[in-house]
Length: 319
Length: 302
Image 1: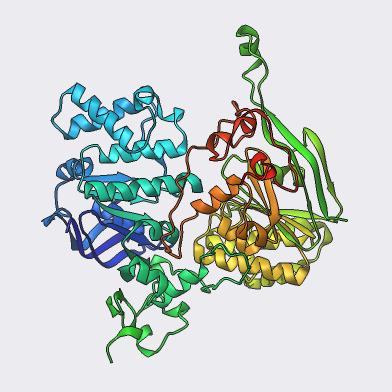
Image 2 (image 1 turned 90 degrees about the vertical axis):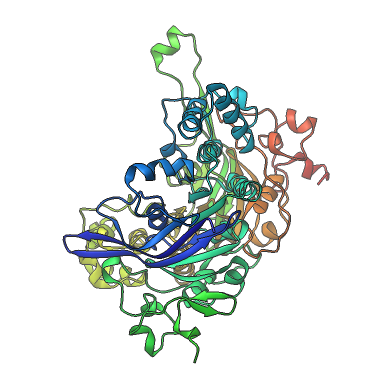
């Protein structure tokens, strides 16, 4: 396993008490595997990514659990060591490519700088490597675009540059947080294809965070569904999409509009996800759940086997 | 008689550099054509969706219809009583310092009918007590309900909705789309629904206009468009939608990007990305014939 997360708990101490943003998150990603992390805003998917790379905004802190990269614990490393790990062994791609690029430097210079920081190469070797990275992420005629600034690229091309930057030091793990959300649908398809190809060809483990189940269906092998800071279902993408086991996943899949020649009414989950300061006892989904029964309001379900997937739901408790 | 009719509507924006630069550097005025000879009709009680990628001009069409912009050419005819608009961002479109009651009441304040606000809030699935709260106390989906209540206050017969669910989570989006369908059935509303999301459009629209680079390249009933797309751009868009069914159908990778509006391609604006383009497509702008603007379709090549 490239990445193992075990029992991760993230807390934000505030004046009005401690908020638990993540509670008991466990998953792992194998080399060359794309794990999708899906959930609605506030479910904790981005916090999970930030906690793994040690970029939680203070006062947020990891209160319990472990993060292991290739078997080595990284959640307790000092800041300086973590900083070297990011970029070198963990690449990160965020939603908005403009926040990841320096508007004052040419993309060639930014790539070279990243390569020279992490790898012991000469300047001319770094330049060759930068050019081959740009070619790999699908930037046509990279020699001609090497000295261009970020604003001279379109949104899709910028996101390609960011992916090239994230891959510059051949990281074992790539964390992509909504990499296609800011892009048009035709460009989105190009970036999805690129991420998939990179995972396959380089054996990079990819954690793909997105709210878009369609992107997961096209890209990932397994998916973790998050709700109110917890993983409620974890399984092969095909199983989770075609036979969801947790009532939240069932509702979520039904609420996704699909292209159909005939109009139909969408399934809707009434209500909204609870705020962090008002997570109900027991299963966090129980107030909205159509299949709630006695244990749900009392005792929190852990992930348990449900068919070929895992689901945190008492419906699947062995009788 | 259609409720709304657009006839050859175009809109140019002046993107010239400042006057002094133009004089000193001998630059001409530069105009950007955001909407180019768009014509369509919307019948009472139907939902017409305009779909396309960012920069295709769909929001400009919405603004031309509600009168926020004046057309450079062509005419917009409206036969209804009142129209209202719903915006994409429910955080930016509600005044944070006003109580919900005041926000919803503002368009009808002159009518002095306080009881109606309660009814409007109930109609969109909120409670009458919510009127005393401020927008920050609501989630994104609830805020969009407030926007809809405000839009309905003046009893419009026509709503222009510019990406009304694009800022919402998918389960909340389902709530809002269902609410909009219910309101349409109950109040006999007519919608112009602007979206970049084809799946959303297929769930709400009766007819769909596909826009590319300021023009409507294809206009058809939703059933027809999604079953038998004709324009190569429509086909490409449909192909690019991620496949939730996981059928493993091979996807034709979509090449290229939307061209720069300041340097529009010759002929058909889609020809640099089109697999069926030929000499004629590079030279001649296709006219809209039988609701599709494509030489290849018109010649029967595809």
